[in-house]
Amino acid sequence: MRAMRIEAPGVLRPARVPAPEPGPGQVLVRVHACGVCRTDLHLLDGEVAIPHPPITPGHQIVGTVVRRGPGEPRGEPLAEGARVGIPWLGWTCGTCRHCLAGRENLCDRALFTGRDIDGGFAELAVADERFCFPLPEGYSDLQVAPLLCAGLIGYRALRMTGEAPRLGLYGFGAAAHVIAQVAVFEGRSVFAFTRAGDAAAQALARTLGAEWAGGSDESPPQELDAAIIFAAAGELVPVALRALGKGGVVVCAGIHMSDIPAFPYEILWGERAIRSVANLTREDAREFLALAPRVPVRTEVHPYGLADAGRALEDLRAGRFTGAAVLRV
Ligand SMILES: [Zn+2]
Ligand SMILES: [Zn+2]
Image (cartoon, rainbow, N blue to C red; front, side, top):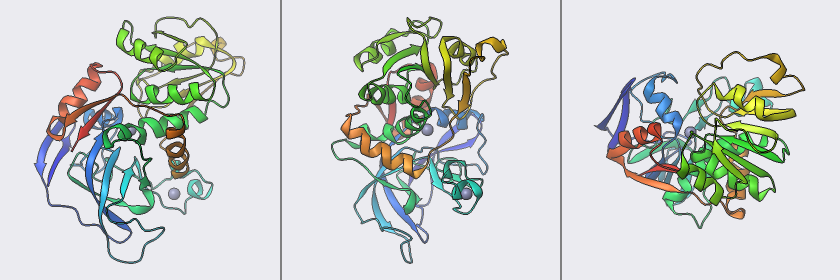
């Protein structure tokens, strides 16, 4: 089968590899679409380490089940032909203290799709069927793909802001364009911060219901109760802290960020908090995939062919599109 593989930092190449075989408890999935995420760029750039290269990246997989592996199902078995989504969280141990505390996103031995397990920049993928999710009808394969990471991890980040009525989103890409819609649906006011001068992203934010949109070098018209930073830029942490009212929280939603510059304690004082969000739980996935069609979340998608994965990643890096890039496989 055809796949795009990361062989070494900076090296993404097309490859012909043997079709994967599903083991016990796994399913073989024919990939129809796979979203492109900033994490894929971090993996390519070597900012997030790949334990055993080469690897096929891609962790927002939409496909149909070809067949199940041998043996008894470990949960509700997936039917052949069923459309499923495969997210970043690919396997957890179920026995470590984080798993036992309901925080499998923090599992010490977790395996992640497209980092430890070959992902969806390929014609076929194998996944543990307990970590595959039925997808809401009414979304095409391309439209639903960004819900699987931009949506899911964005949703977990949104939950970390509690009930915050005035929400800032720093970095208005794939995740923010999904989560802005959920936040507006929940009755919050959204303030969108883009790269300075990115009129297209600011216009998209307003279309999706943001009360205000501007550059991250600008101050919002009102004090924020919470901010989520989706951009990988550590210098945004003190910027967001300065925009927060007392008791507010800054949630860093990315897997990698450049160093956070030193800042005066007074901008943290007043019970302001900074926290990160890591990965997702299957509970997040079930909740969000049920919520998305009720909003309803609409995704702005830019399709690329499988062979153009490298171009999609470079366009993401350069901010050449608004919304989300998705590979049509
Ligand atoms: Zn992702
Ligand atoms: Zn565990």
